[in-house]
Length: 126
Picture 1 (tube, helix red, strand yellow):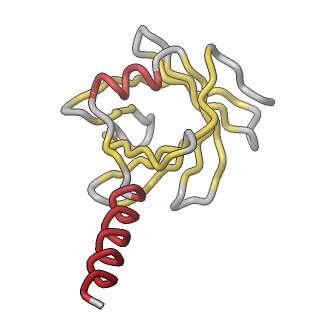
Picture 2: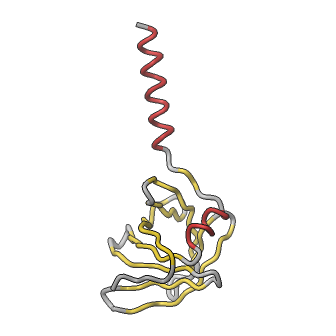
Picture 3: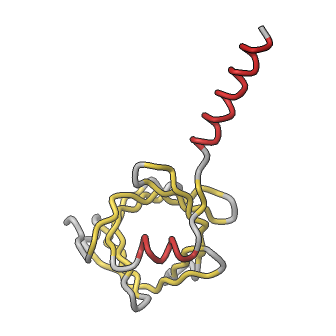
């Protein structure tokens, strides 16, 4: 009986570890985003966008309902992915890998963005 309890405890612990989100380092963020296009889901607004971050610090956001590309800035600061916004100012997010190429962005501890489908180059699917 004790052996079963120990085995079940180990199994539960290992599943918890496997499902834990891994926080990306600043270098991992640079590697993930630099010269890549990616899909963005803004959680609060339930809107889908596309982004592109180049190696010169330019951050482009494709807004499909306006068929418009907005140019902004991006950088890494204190291990966070930071972007500028023309109305809301600068925002830095902790990035966590959720597995299968999906990443969650957290601002002030709140999950604000889901990013996925990272691909080389500037490739907005219009």
